Amino acid sequence: MIQTLRRLFLTLLFLSVSTPNLFASAEDEAAKESPIDIMGTVADHDYLKTPFGKIYLPRIFYWENEAGETSLDAFSNSKAAIASGSFEDVDGIVTPVAGSIIVDFSITSHLVFFWLSLGAVFIFTMFARGRYLKGVGRESEPKGAVQNLFEIFFVFIRDEVAKPNIDDRKHAKYVPYLFTVFMVIAFMNIFGLLPWAATATADITVTAVLAVCTFVITQFSGTKDHWGHVFWFPGVPLGVKFLMIPVELIGLFTKPFALAIRLFANMMSGKIMIIAILGLIFIFNDMYGTVAAYGVSIFSVVLTAVLYILKLFVSLLQAYIFTLLSAVFIGMAAESHEHDEEHYHAEHTA
Image 1 (cartoon, rainbow, N blue to C red):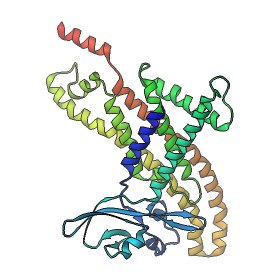
Image 2 (image 1 turned 60 degrees about the horizontal axis):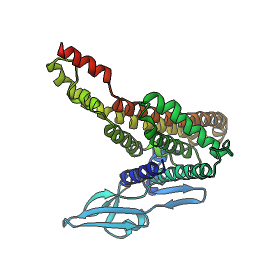
Image 3 (image 1 turned 180 degrees about the vertical axis):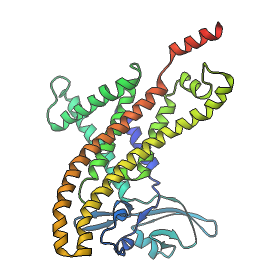
Image 4 (image 1 turned 90 degrees about the horizontal axis):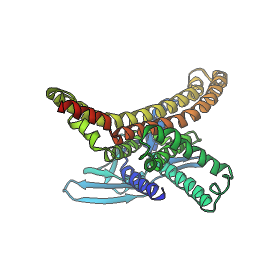
């Protein structure tokens, strides 16, 4: 289990390091005329917000200049990159003065919280592992809130997600991955509820990385029978087989696409809704004055508090849905339709 978690961590780290440069700069945010910039708030940034101010993050570019020469340059922040003279700010995006960026390895706010979530899951798992090695939970009942939470979540993923959807002989080897995905998404969603924090799952690149991991595992888990149904669907006329092949191939890619979009859209919309409702205070203050702002603040604050409670439930729900669908897709690929094959061969022989 530990080896599987370690491999997953390295895979996610490799896939996520090239997060695209699609965040708003601090100068652009300050220049907004609107009393509240909703999209600027939910966007990925080159800094972390804290109660004491902003912490600007490193910028790392692998780029090509106009002479065709490539180089890997690292800067402490965006201002340092622009001050070097090789880069400039174009509509809030740092780009080379002459040339183009090949890969942007810059650290962003969403990427930081993605890593923090991975780290939280690793610590959570290592703590539980230490307790089990001491016999707590094996020779006696689990002790402490952390170990009990671990047991609840792990047993739930194993018994309610993996077992019902994956073959009984194969489900055990997928439990570590499904548990890791569930906990990582849950931590990212919950971190997004904290003040000044960023919701990493409200970034399509983050959800796409998770969906790609499920896609890769699903395809490598595919049985001979699974691929036979993709490329040569049994039991149908020859002409229909050629029509089914592109349909099945498209279906292979629409499943992870739906996983990524579903999680991203739900978390993004929830974040926007909370910011918009709370932002009514600033909008009313800008349009109608202080009295109106105080009046609408009662409604905004109460509704925001209710939405936060609802969003906490949605955070766990979305983690569950992503994990459940991953288990369903893996189970479909890993399943062997022995009875269907026998029936087909019997009909074909007859």
